[in-house]
Image 1 (cartoon, one colour):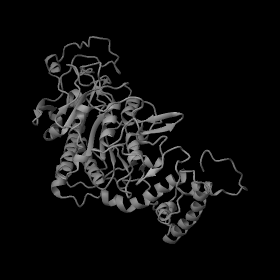
Image 2: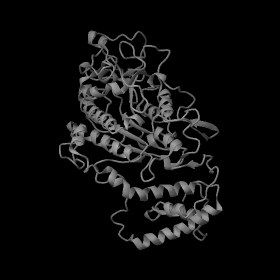
Image 3: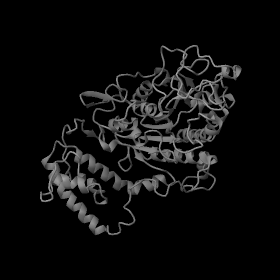
Image 4: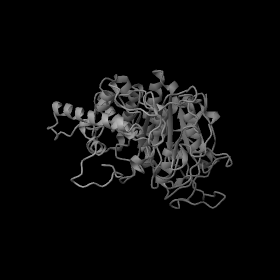
Length: 509
């Protein structure tokens, strides 16, 4: 029963609406919406009770896209814990030249854990790749053949060195909880390309969630149908609650059919009497999707039909097909590669937004990117796994002709300091870090925005890049004017880019 429902005694009759909400989340409601839509029994209205515009097509806004899109899909690679830009992508010869000398930033610096030790050179050597000559660290050398398809932004700035707030900012455009994830906005604006699979899929780190957990892909004030669907590729149960519990053997095909018929009658009455209430339709759509996913999802997640050369490309040619019982850092290539291959399969089947996470905040020694103690130990396995999987994804999409309309965004919540912490680690650096993008209208082989000689702050401090600009650019490539994708909430026209953001013209092909 909804929290807003009025109190009733046990002798009061059970209203149809309350009965629907009480039982509608069970297995009996899964295939209901498809039956109702086929019979034209769902009520439609110009504007729902939540004030949102009606859905068009497969769940998108009727006024979107605003202009011809360059891309129609997005993959977001999120490194939870804060990856070190100066050790992976942003080469700083000054750190090699002055390694071990006392760090001097030329101004007072507020560090998260006082990690202001001597200058620390990159942990791994850099060398140039591609026609663009882009220097990359040897630990991400697998990305070398792809650099001419990639665009780097080295002057991104954050607002905080706190993991949870900084992760929210990159994932939702706001530092506080209660705002929709980027994938939710894309789903709300453009809808699905395949009604049998979710529009927005999240592939978390195999060890668990990063800072904020599912709040990073929650819909907040958008309809719940646009939230991210969590999938753990390789686990015995990749999608939770997709099938009835094995203990529920009392659920038979006859009882299921009878329950659907009963709910169908209740919903026909409810929808007819309340044409201005869109919550019922949103709930039914989720049931309908769950029912279709029972057939579509297993096929999409089954890698058994992939040829050997594709499995090898993603680092999955070692014979492991099930989830391991023990975590071995040497297998990071296989973990991340599997998620990238599943992402490709989801994208080609019509999933519009896939978010892949690397790293979580639990356990020690660290198996995330928060390398306060030892960058080489923490970043090493994660970087190799990320680079192999990301490079395979770029190359695979390109050979299939999908990279032209698929955007890949690599991000993290902030960077790490050019000075050392405890000799081998680095502290948080929200003052400057790196994003890179590829595909979908992105101008490859370019760098937009540089950091200073240390990688401490943007070279041009008056004109940094912010997450709002990255979001605005991605929406632009999807055919959306970021200032027009808004929802009225609590008297404010909310949007992914808040009141900020501009399209980065230098990133556009």
